[in-house]
Image 1: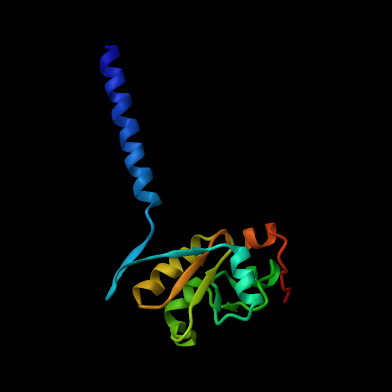
Image 2: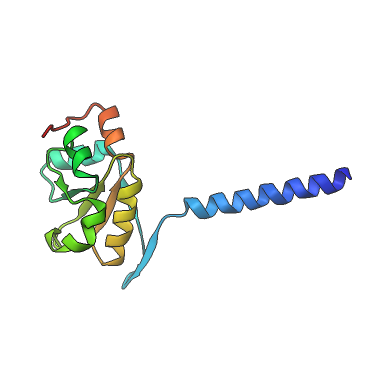
Length: 141
C-alpha cells in the first residue's frame, strides 16, 4: 500500500512539474528569421530608454479609468486591450513598441497579439505596479 501511495505522489508531482514548465514557457511566433520570443523590459530599463529619448512607442493597454485614476507613464499612449484590434492603425510600424498594463498580464496578451502581426514589441515586466514600486514618475490626468 505504501509503494502505491508513493507512486501516486510521484505521478502527481511529475504532472505538476510538467504543467508548471508549460505555463512558464515564453510566447513565440514564427518569422523569416525563425521563432521570435516575447522579450521583457524592466521598468528601470524602460525609464532609461525614455529619458535618453530612444525611439520607442509606449502602449498602455489598461482601461481609461485605470489610466486616469491610477496614473500613467507620461509618454504612454492609451489603447485599451479590448480596443487594440480595431485601433491597430494608431500603432507605428517603424519603431519598437513597449506594452504596459497594471501588472504585466494584459500587456503580455497585447504583445503576443502584436508579435503575431509582425510588430516589434516588448513587454514591460511588472507593469505600473513595478513602475510605482521603483519610485518612477507617474503622470496624473
